[in-house]
Length: 150
Image (cartoon, rainbow, N blue to C red; front, side):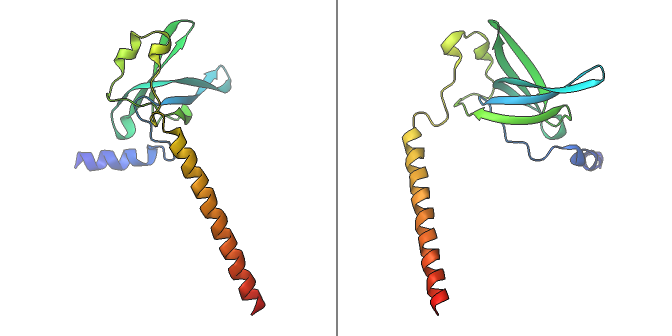
């Protein structure tokens, strides 16, 4: 009974429209910062090294390097302080926690892209989609011209 009550209370507070963030993704987290009477948005860019919890209590830990020093911040995904989350690139990982990135420095810190060198395949797919859309537009125009002549 108490679980149903908790879900009923939490459901309206869960943010909708947020992207699904995976471990290893490089993301931009737009955070509302309040300084005195002013409010501004600050962007925190980094790699997602940990995701934990579910529902309203879900959090993500984002790591980035500032002045050769590692900085990690944990953000509640459904917090009103988090204005927006944008995915910059998807990284390919085989682990659920990327704590090993803490010891890595320089280029060793980078994760390979999820497509792993399959960029040519996506380019071919884009060209095929464009050609298909063009042929469909021509067919539709021909059908409209035939309908107008009748």
